[in-house]
Length: 340
Image 1 (tube, rainbow, N blue to C red):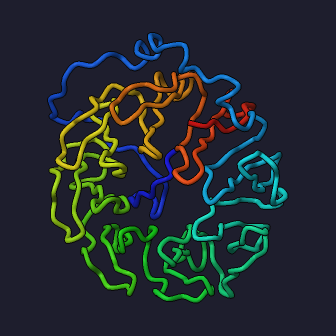
Image 2: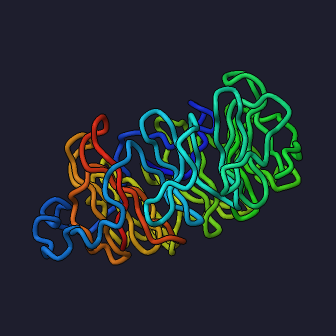
């Protein structure tokens, strides 16, 4: 599960969608298979009871941020602290990650943002069908019906500060947010001024000064990176490209994932069946397919430091040092949290 925003022409403001399956023309050094690497990893890397900080017990577990994580117990979401104690009782139909002191939640028809006491503190007076986390003081919300409504931005008083006019919208990052007009994506600043005109079939948020964009058709195009002026700085040659973190970004070449640096050089060869963005110095990877494969973690040198053994593994929290993992399948498995 990726948490980074991706704007696409298929689903405006959707979560990440895979790119096309054509292989990029990139020469990479030979590297050992991730599965065989995992098997040869020292036994000390296997998670033991002292690494499992919160034992698997939740029906769903989200990423920690600001000392709390949303979890689902049965049909409802609540929040736990770093000791695994429930601090906001399960009562929500959905619950987002805390950001800037608030989290997006919904109970029936009531949608808004709560504080860390579980109290609604931002409840827009207009009808909203969807909402994103606050970032840089603003949050993207869809006003009106789910399919036909338009996206705009609110402040923490629930006031519209950039009017609802976009087909899709992402969070602000590095002072810019992705928005779409007529099936194409570009970027605006916090005054709603267009900085990079809508021209791409797919984009991601800016991170460390760069943003991944798809040049050409959504299904047959390639991903590269632009800077904040809109200049292409890493040529489009990847089948999928993601956020930079710690100077590295995960990319897909054919059906394998690896990592590039800001010069566009592959520094960790594409050898993983899945790889997520680095967070707190570690990145989740998968050996095997999405049904039977196992997840573990690598460091920024590409070395496996936690052997693939989980049925799902999420990002480590930069602020709290914990990561959600699932033991068991996606229907009956349980989520817990490991430490680094």
